[in-house]
Image (cartoon, rainbow, N blue to C red):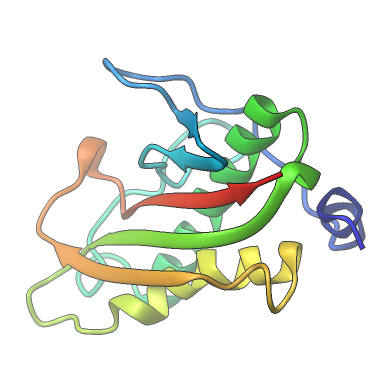
Length: 153
């Protein structure tokens, strides 16, 4: 099943692709790989999920934020590649969680994005290498920031 068809089957609506808010490109394609810049967790109204996991946000809210960042990444891919069916596989996800020093479940938070990609691209093509780390601050107070690399056709 194509990724575009799977997206519809899952009932997922992608947000508008985020525009660069600095001196960078949201997507760069080089030698069969698509690199996304860090994406933040945008809500449908354009606002951000902000806060620190382990303080004013719980793990589930962090997971939901990672999923929202993943939807923004898919939107950037669709916009830049002309559709998600150009994606051959997820190569790597790098996720950063704004959290307290005591919070140690960053991988569980970034699963919000990882599971989204698995559901859209399939068990084999949708799961790549991954890192999940914590930090004390992110741009605009965002709960998470995620970047990804995809192999494309």
